[in-house]
Length: 632
Image (cartoon, rainbow, N blue to C red):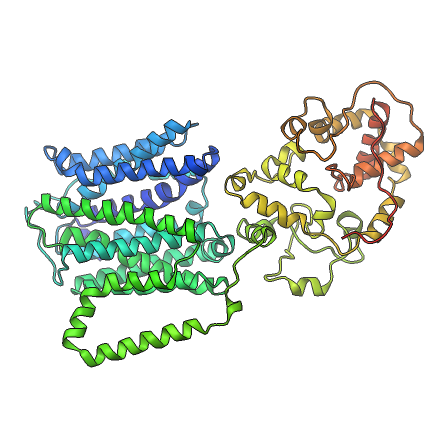
């Protein structure tokens, strides 16, 4: 490792790492999150991603011809500059045409940079330590992207990081070692067409698995959620990349591709079993890093190209066909099927292993027969796995629970109403041990930064839940909760609302009876003032009860009953009606979208009731009614 840096191969390592970080954390991840922030989804999102693929394909195939008169270092800087500018542009408020143009530049910049870097890698890497430098560069790229602070950073910060790395990498000088026109070729050279087919199959598998994990909350929670998962992924990527480099250095290129397809294919099969997601999360990064190292090493040193220009053409074909088109096909499979079928995994394995299988059949017929028998037995065992091992989420409530898990809602919200405490009046009937044991996994939580949600479906309407997820501070003054508007771009938000709305007690009889008896303590009435009530009304109530309130205007057509508009005309009210108002403020009205304000103190509720009783120009809202029986 020390000699690698002493001989100048660090230059190529740094360039490879920078390109991988840009592609992984920004082009493949941060840019999509940024599009979600901009409200670009559905058909528009597909158009933007298609523009990126078009840019990548066109410049991968044509950059060697278009820029052949420029020195390789300048070509690389052009690619880096285009990609970095696109990343910086993404931080602005983009319209759809601007987002399409930005995506095209991302693909174009990557097309120029990747083909130029690989075709002329001996300029920055030399040949003696090339495999080690490639493995280290790819491993560092993946490791950096999985650092929790970077992986969970905002899209803007990810874009700035990616752009900064490319601009810094553009200043990396070429080595003093002159690049030969025919790069020294390593052992175990693989034919171009078999390599192209193998890389296309591997990237197809990877992209399908990536899309499925990203859009399945339960799978995402088991792979990329939490610092422990991310650090484990980072370590697996780095270790696998170095192992792949060692195998390539020893001339075992076919073994690298075999390990890649075996681990990736196995991970894809395990994705059909959410209970086995931890196992899948161990195999997936290994397979990705193995083929990623080969994806750089093959066109640079193993393709048998006679010149840098030929290396560029071969690299362009591989990155255009296997990289961009294979990735698009994999994403399409994930979108349309939602899983990777065993038949496709087998087809991909055959595509990658075909040359080795031919040699095995020709030279080792007995061993080939044993391998065929093992594959057949494995397929039979797969078919007899218990049907209940596959646990896809079929209903909106089931999918919503997975969203709740993947978005980390348990960090701030518990689902456990503690018995014999004030919880029971605030949140509903106490939770039972049987309820907790029935949860898979349990979601009781260990702290409350927000309200308990065990019975939230009995306290909040679906409309309120949706509105609060989209714009928390519009409904809850100074709420620290972030907006989850992006979840509603692909239906996950509606599923989450369905899940939260389903969290109800078996019976609300005792709760309703307790609420009817409640009123602020006498001391609270004595301390409360209408002046404080006016301030509280402006913070908590005006969004729905003012004629131009933000929530009222946005969701006017969705309210089950339009909230009353509070005017400034005094209305004489009796103490009984003021107490009734206090109960409405405290607990809401279950038959409407009116929420309770359980978290306010008795004094604040009394102040609001006093102010509201003195100002409405419409009839008072209905108070909670006496229970007539169990409510589902």
